[in-house]
Length: 186
Image 1 (cartoon, rainbow, N blue to C red):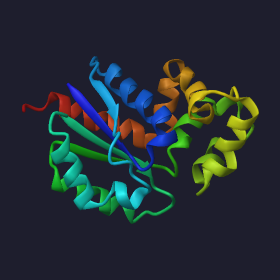
Image 2 (image 1 turned 120 degrees about the vertical axis):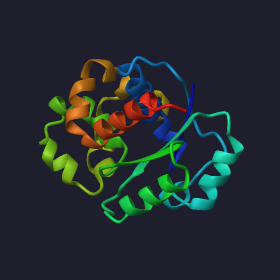
Image 3 (image 1 turned 60 degrees about the horizontal axis):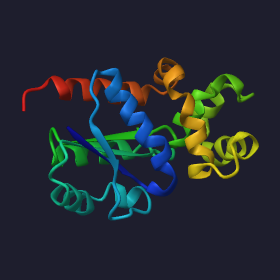
Image 4 (image 1 turned 90 degrees about the vertical axis):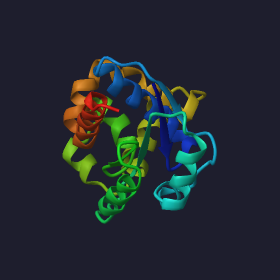
């Protein structure tokens, strides 16, 4: 089984997204080959949710069984309708998960007990990457670590996975959707 992760910007997001997707599948007893989209290199949510670009990606990478578009919601609640429209264009092959409010929150969920800020405040912040994630990484991550410290920050995912799912319900919902997809006949 092959899964292609489609981020809004793979340069840093890949260090968060690949371990999260691998953990979702491991939790469900599967070990697919998970790849973060190498080309085209997308720049922003608008490109990642663009119907023409997504159609080209699905056509270019037909060997993948499932496509996961994992992008920031950025406080834009209208993105949910766009996400549903993209999924409807590729039924049974493509899911969209909107991180509330940014992908980096999933990384912060691993370290929630040590952040010194209440989790509700982090989840409510429209710009959690700038306000919480970047200062956290600058203070604690090894300076030369991959993904500007994101690889280091994700190392504790296994031990904190249940808590991450509780703190980030959109990930728990994605896991349930993947579980249903795995159980469905193809």
